[in-house]
Length: 384
Image (cartoon, rainbow, N blue to C red; front, side):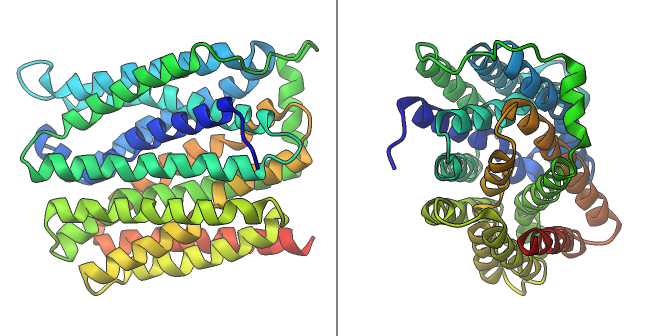
C-alpha cells in the first residue's frame, strides 16, 4: 500500500517521540544518583508526565476539530523540543540538582506528549481513509524505532561515562529537525461545522468509547511499566551491568518493530478484535516470563517476546475506534487516548511503590495482570 509524504513525515514524528519518551527507563538509576532520590520516588516522573498529558490529549483532540491539524501539530513539536532541552539542562540549574525542578519540566513534556499522542494518530487516520489500520500500524513501527534508538544512545553514553543529560539534548535536536520537515506540508483543515464543547461531551455517552479507553489505558500501563522497570530488574535483581541492563529496553522495542511490520498487512485484512485477542494473550504470558526470569539472558528473551506480542495492540485499538466513529474522529481519539495518560500515570508509579515495598519481581507482575484483563476484554469484543 502506498503512503503519502505526510504519513511518512508523521512516522518521523513518532520516531522522535519514541526516542525521548523511552530515554527515561534506562536512565532511572543514573537519575537517582544525579538527584539523590530513591528509585521508588523516580516513579513520580511518570505520574507528573501524565498530569500534563491527560488534559493535553483531550484538548488537542477537540482543537483538532475546531482549529485544524497543522497549527496544533507544529505547536506540540515545539513543546516537545523545548521540554527535552529543559530537562537536559535541569540538573545544572542551582547549586545542587533539583528533583522538583525536573518534575516541573516533566509536566511540560507531558503537555507536548499529549498533543503528539492525539494529533499524530488523528492525522495519520485522516490521511489514510477509509482503511487506516495499515498506516497506523506501520507508522507506529517508527515509534518503536525511536524507542530502540533512545535506550541504545543512553547505554552508549553511560558505558562511556558520559552524563545521561546528553541523550535528552539529542532528543531536542531531533524535534528541531522534525519541525522544519513538517513546516511546509499541508494537513487536513478544521471542520466547517460548529462543534461546541457540549457536543464533544456527548461522545461520552457511547459505551464503546469507554471500553476502548480502558483497553488503551491498561495496555499503556503494561507497556510503560515493563519498559521502565525491566532495566532496573536486570541490574538490581539479576546482576547485569548497567549499560547491558539498558539494552533490555532496546530488545523490547526492536521486537516491537518486527511485530508492527508483521501486523501491518494482517491489520489490512482482519478485523481488529480477534487479532487483538491473540496479541494480548501472548503479551500476558511473555510479561509473566519477564517477572519470573531466572537469569539476565532469559529476561532479555522474555522482554523481546513481550515487545513482539504488544507490537500491534495500540494501533489496532485505534483502528477499531476508526471503524466505528467515522465522524468527529479527532474528538473520539482525544477521549480514548486519555487512557495513555491514565495508564502511564498510575501503573509505572505503582510498580515503583511495589518495588520499594516488596521487590522488583513483584512489581513486574503488574504488567502481566493488566494484559490478562485486556485479553478478557477483547475476547468479549471478538464474540460480539
